[in-house]
Image (cartoon, rainbow, N blue to C red; front, side):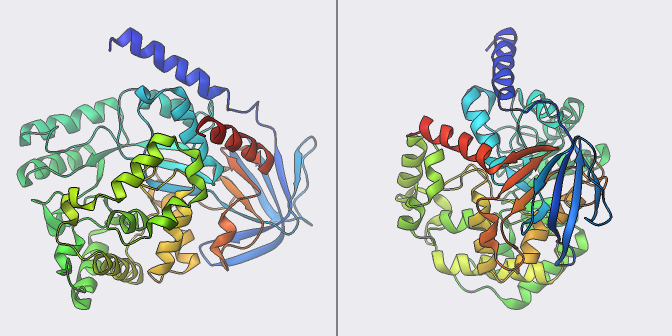
Length: 440
């Protein structure tokens, strides 16, 4: 596609996305609200939270904080306010997917309170999309984007790996994405150049690299629990507890984060129930061809190399045990779902991920911390968010109950604040209905 033609198409998509954005931001006040402190697992009752532009400017007792003149007041009595969620392994459709697919995907994230997405597969045109999203010109999560991936097809030598790193640094991608297929020398060249250039890299661990080599060069995140199961010797038998603890301690000492995407892998391993997956209500927000493709994929495990000769339930149980040990040993757990993926609908996928993390034994507080405070700490050199605090980015979720006691309250939020833009439940439902109608 010629550059002029591509930019014309990109401009059209940006304009279409802008139709979902809001008018100039006004001050918004959440009055008489219960504010969640995810870090300490506590609730501050009868609070008043004031948002101005894309920032929280005041948080405190309603008896102390005054309501600014002209502000929009949201009566939040009996409701709970928490930070927006981070999706640390998400995907943004390429520009070639078309304007509607991109607009729908971005809205699906936001509608469920996902206000930050670390996009893990960059493509042409996404840097301009990031600019539009992060300036508030379109309705979208704040985007931090990995460049096009380093894999066995895109890299064929250590020299090429190093050159690809420097190119992506020059293009201003936020991080590098590692995919399978790299040789150990190629991976090491990429890692050395990346560390020297000051850009992080994360994603998979190629087979030739292995867990210990990835930890030794401080791969910033290991996604999908890649590399751990071979290390703990549990592919077809229950993992050794001592090896699990050893892996966790090595990860913590290397200061490497883990993005589990454990619900997706429960599906990929065929340890989930197909009838349950087919009945997920959020599937109505995906195109019919996508839904049918997911069902057919699930029914044909014999065509998937990593499943051959496997014991699905044992492998899933090993991943649950691993996640619990990683969490207990203080490893940085960063919430992610790999949406959109097989039966993983953007935004809605958070609920399956949270349920599966609970299945592993993590508490609601630990799970919510991985999606808020931990994500904010990860990006602390870029912005302040992930807590309901003055000066922090105004990414918020208003809920009808306390998710620290029951994560079911994360579903159907009363409203979402994205960079200071308030979307009430009616606004969310109206747009979701339009998406559903397009895909019936």
